[in-house]
Amino acid sequence: MRLAFTVTQKQRLIELDAEEAITGLVFNSEEERDSFFKNINRELVHKNRERLETLRHQRMRPAVREMEQLLVKTLNEAGFIEITTPTTMSGGMLARMGITGEHPLYQQVYWLDKNTCLRPMLAPNLYAMLGRLEKLWPDPVRIFEVGQCFRKESKGSRHLSEFTMLNLVEMGFEGDPRQRLKELTCLVMDTTGLLYSLEAENSEVYGDTVDVIVQGMEIASGATGPHSLDSAWNITKSWAGLGFGIERLVMAREGFKNIRRVGRSLMYLDGARLNI
Ligand code: ATP
Ligand code: MG
Image (cartoon, rainbow, N blue to C red; front, side, top):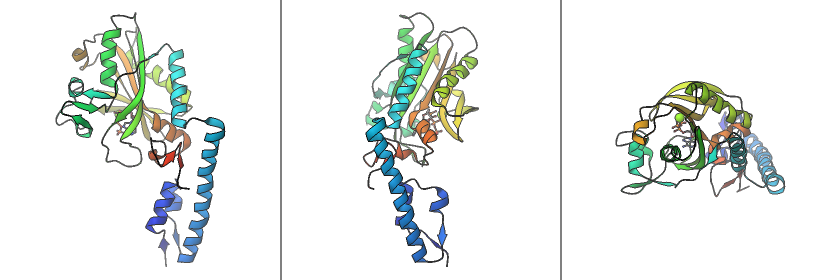
């Protein structure tokens, strides 16, 4: 007889972030299985409790917020100014990004009313702010925002419906925008300490983009201008910008298999399950 874990047991193991090698195990008898489950459950509960203890006694901020803090410091030191823009957005702002009707991202938007949504990205607000600050500040203008974004997602372990984006952009510099994009990627990724690679991609919003990949997972997408979208925002200068998912960065750093552990939650705190 080859017995797998029961549905409830498997569910519990996934909640506690057990390795796939464990959740897929098969046993010769119920007794063997249940006794193994009991032990592994105890071990994982212990791990989760330990994580909560280090939060309470040492770190005091969830890893997602620590990561954000670290990156904000790096960006400030590199001359990037933090901006804070509204979490709600008008449909017109999305339309100026080319996100309308049949666009895949449009299908993922949470609408609050006919013309107001929860922002699925920060880029439209950054574009708008660049256009204004460009008239007030000397070149290059360097800004970034860290904030919640919302998308209706059907995909599993790497997607949250509410996540934290860090979007930075530099505009009005001398030289090759692609090279600058690489340098900015390096600035952020060196701070995280994660090994990464770059992959040319074709994005639904930006056309040609560069994705930052860590452990086979997209962590960020970057783009450069002059770009076909620029004219809608009265932007004429060259720019380089990148949007990072903070939860994905933490997921990769901690080796978590499911992003839900680090998302905003009432059931997880800083990667630890609370019904333990
Ligand atoms: P994916 O292809 O993985 O769905 P994307 O290309 O749609 O991501 P972008 O619009 O490029 O995502 O957003 C920039 C970054 O924001 C992504 O690289 C990722 O790190 C993060 N991100 C995007 N959507 C989500 C989500 N639903 N949950 C968590 N992080 C996300
Ligand atoms: Mg992308």
